[in-house]
Image 1 (cartoon, rainbow, N blue to C red):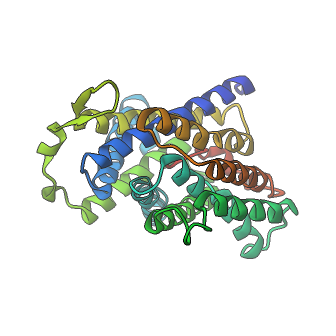
Image 2: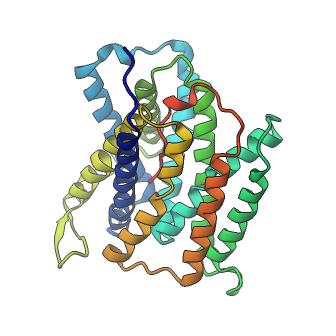
Length: 320
């Protein structure tokens, strides 16, 4: 007997996943401010999540870890572009931009996806795509406040966030084609493994001094300090593994479009958390722009007339 879909549970799981991802943006910012480089923080997150997911599956469902040789090239590209580079570019962005603004730029991925399937795949899309594009571009103009001497935001941070959006769009586009016939949990696990292998080559571990993880870091809460490794463990477990599992569980109760729409609350959560925790204050124009961009994302999420059957197997959100 198939499991009964309970939309209320799906909404709750998706909102909880978005909350975890949102908190992770602030925790990651603290780690970056402590002096750990984006490459190393990304490597730690990917490697830790890969080890954790492998361990959980090896104990609970070892059969799900079966891997066909023909899947390796796909998983390599999927993990490197969709996971390793998306997360690295996100860390570069939040190192130079407020967390909420970086997420607004990155979450324009659905607009890029809708444009791709219309212009490249020649799929039919609803006319709302063009309204989504107009809203997103207009909102980003307000977020960047381009009238202030060319913009009030760090150019490298903006470029990193927009490139992360392109990588995230690639993740979803590859996923909806590649998830057919593949276990979604195993796909998530092996994509993190591919990302971990990539960073082992790009940022070799023997060049990393693990002693830095023992350094104490102020967390901006009543003068509290914690070892850096505590932040890293949070980023791996509560910033990657747990929200990914929540996202997958939500898709048992919601369609991916619905879950994706609910997940757009993440930049809102992230902005509030960063404001209360780090004092990252957004201007009125940036708040307005963020709202406009989110409106464009909502339209883009519903612009496609049909999606491949494999799409419901994918996590609804990735980066933060």
